[in-house]
Length: 177
Length: 172
Image (cartoon, rainbow over all chains, first blue to last red; front, top):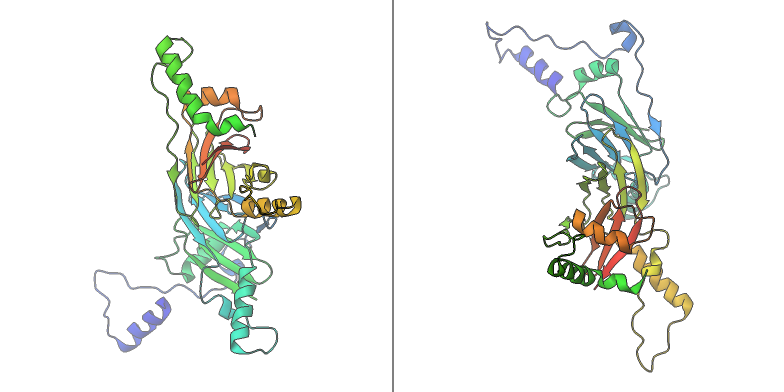
């Protein structure tokens, strides 16, 4: 959206850059980490855990304790002085079931039921902190108002991964295979 | 569970009265009341800070699972509060005259169903004065980090914050 707005603004000339304000330089396109950074940059190694067991992750950037409930669907953030900052159900997205096509052709109602059942049985089973080098690249491509750099990645089975902001609890689907 | 525990609050009140009226040095002169557990919405989690053990007690959003988290972020314990042998606290419905008594298998099924539907909706830290009395009455696995929890209007539970052990405290 940001890139789109920038393109529209410059091509139509509707917005003249102020003399006081420095010209906006759009970020470079996303390329592999090695071309922009000194060393190789890899994604976080997600730590897997047993389904049916909770998991606690200490986020060094936000200082929060992230608690994955034993149902594998809810995550809460706890401050060091014992307050709950946020609580989210990562599967609470009405669009999520629609992203999984039914394996065989069925009536529309049966497909919806299959999709809902499929999502109802999914659970978070791995979580990890994004490395700092990935963080710099991600900051260029995400909405800065929602994602403020405290990036956590969580995954469910082999199909779904999310990107979360540990401080705000905002999340978005990252990959669906 | 011993039947006398169901009437424990009234016993406690009596003991306090005797203690203050007779001036026995072992009891506090101030009245001792049980904690008022903080209620929370079913389906939402709840976090309680236990001042005695220093850990955070997290009630999961299903109302059944509880975890203790140390301030450094390590998981101390995690329990299904109503798993294990919680069925032993099941009180079967009174037998109606003329009706056949439920079979042992049916009673086990009822107990399991009762246990499956339990969930806590309020939790609080027991005050130190109440702790003194509870220590004399509870089994040895309870080590004094007492948390009071409740399910609906009928059941009260006592939880040890350090170990995660659960005991029924009251039934109405």
